[in-house]
Length: 346
Image (cartoon, rainbow, N blue to C red; front, side, top):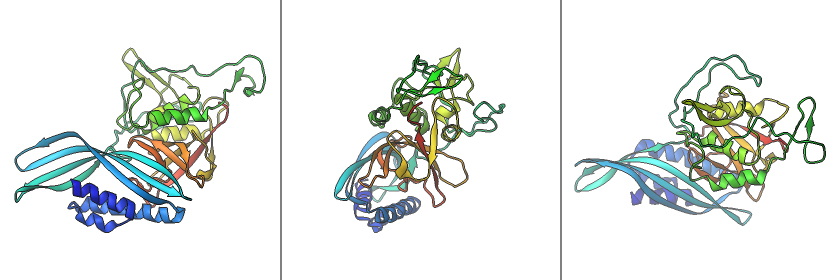
């Protein structure tokens, strides 16, 4: 186990992919090498320099027999990067299942399998619905069908402001005024809860979009409660045994679609062309296969010295991770992104 961690650190800091030769599992070795090659090329292009790598392993569960053993471990990765002589610290919590076998008087690693990654096994779940006001309907693939915490807080459909002034923008016919999106508050929420679940909400098995939605809500984005899971953007808890949340709150592709559609009030966004146009509290959506199915979302919480976004995320809890996710097992050459700038007034 120590040899394995040392090989990861050596490759991470020095770019020495040859260190992976010490890992017995050929499939995982290839997986690591692909990821390392993509990151090395990215770092050279963006002038990013890894200067320190540290890993801490925590045993989550294990089983064992006389000749075989299996351990689920959480690896806390801390990696320092530098650009223009200015450093920042990236953190990730990755889970792996490590299988051992006993031979010739010692335990050896036989297989290593990443767990709960950005390509985690998804529960497929479909519904048929009439198109709603924001264009929903048809078949949806949901990464999880979570049980909702009945104690979670929620907001009404909109915030209504009396009078007029510089504080907001009035929309004709609705009598609704917009409150400013508090970007620093959204980022602060994402910083506080990146590595642990907020007990006011249920933690989903695939939690990336639930986490991003919580951050948007903390920044002042008002929920649009429609009572229909296929429309609006809302999380209300549970009533009479029914789970009350919208697909856009918890499903990656549905949130991307919600952000892409124009609307007169509530959570609104504009798609921009490049990541350097984003601000704190903005959202990046990830289509790993280039097929317009977005399976991961992140929220912007910081920037590199050259102004590129660093993001926080779940399902692999991540803090100040470089936006392009080339360090993810899910990333491919076909990966496509959508960059959403959240409206300044919601």
